[in-house]
Image 1 (cartoon, rainbow, N blue to C red):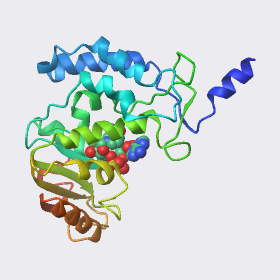
Image 2: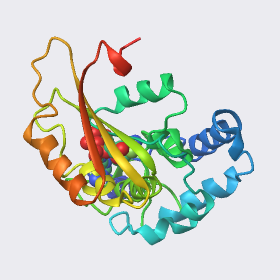
Image 3: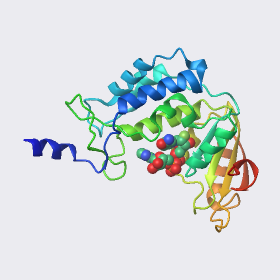
Image 4: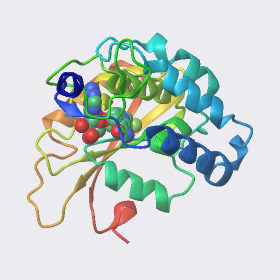
Length: 251
Ligand code: 2NF
């Protein structure tokens, strides 16, 4: 009986839910709404934690839909000022360093929901009120409609829809496809920018010093991006940048 129980929980190929998920969500919510962005201090973190949990608990972890997250989304609307949005793809740490120094800029992880969920993992199980801490569906090996992937696609979409003015993206020039159509940026964010609100997409292609640059503003992947953006009636600019000078300097 015991053995059967635990093997059922090991059925997925991805890492299990993060230990203390509920507590971490609540703690990050308080930290964000009271210290990071005190304008949001009226948000109800208990309600947010509960809506987050209710989105996936007792459900088939491979049948997530956007609707499951609607109650959570209703509690938290994105509030990034114009000209302050920063997207990233394969440059997470660098983009976060950038918005830490340029404090008024926001990546998704500088907004409440992105801040709460960053680096966490979560899933439940049909007919159980517990989270599965042993394993969760892997987005490639098990199913793409798992609750973590659906969450990031949805918050990324909303983040892009709400962007306005000049928006930026930090891309990695030390890999062969700095712009990847299959990434969240290429698949979701680019297509959800609103041309009525977004004036320009400013791309930064960042190169590691000492490494041969594998892609740049004049490469074919950035040309794809430029084409997609211009077809959407948004202006496109691009700048190659070394990690050790300009706005992306290490410190
Ligand atoms: O974990 C996050 N904070 C996160 C995850 C997915 C998307 C953030 N985003 C948002 C950010 F706001 C960025 O603007 O999308 C943009 C970055 O996503 P990307 O897919 O363009 O960039 P990658 O460096 O390729 O991926 C970021 C992380 O997400 C994971 C991937 O393994 C990496 O850890 N990831 C990408 N797609 C999926 C997916 N469908 C995924 N994890 C689960 N399901």
